[in-house]
Length: 301
Image (cartoon, helix red, strand yellow):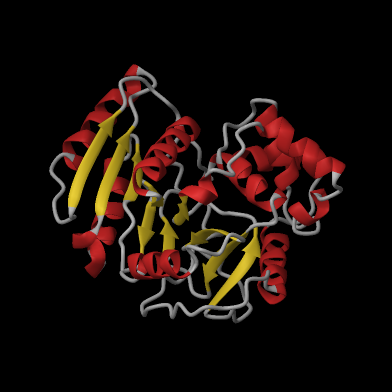
């Protein structure tokens, strides 16, 4: 098996960063993994101390095959940092596993990611691998595909990332012209189209909504595990782009996910379960309140 490098994006949360790294080190594959950490610079004086604490911590990390630290000289912000970092790592290694500094992984995360990257490497319709699934009520298959791409503990190849379109307006125009907005929104269950509009208007700076739209418009699929390998610990108001919520927390897999080749097509049961989850946690509200909620949630992504 060839092991993909892990790109970890960190900013000003030393405790969260430590939890992320320690969980990653609990994976037996960690010793075979090149770890590349992108440490963003403080955007203001108030963030300087915490950024310095993060940098002091990451300089002392050990246990991976290699550790490379990229300390930004200026503040990139999350979207620019991830787009730049993923582009560079894919260019050098041909594949990448991506984590942010608030993602705690199962000890079977790296096994799943690397096995899936190897298995579907030549399958052009598969754009990425994802480690998180919502805490849905339905029983999901061991692995399944959904159209699009996702952002909490994910991996891709150079060929997948080459399809990323940074121009939100171009993405929205295609979704509208092709009458895909309803499907893009899981048949109205979640306002992803509105998130994209907000990105265009500068109300959020999300790379994730553009990654999802880029994959969706190309008809590409992402592989998910039936049990989540991810716990996001950042929905505690500690980050630059998150609010407090427990809606997305669920059990994390305590046994390996079996990675076997399955038919490369979207799974209707999983899609319906995702839509039902969205509807359950986001009841109908007025359009004005919905816009505010959408902005808040998108900043958490």
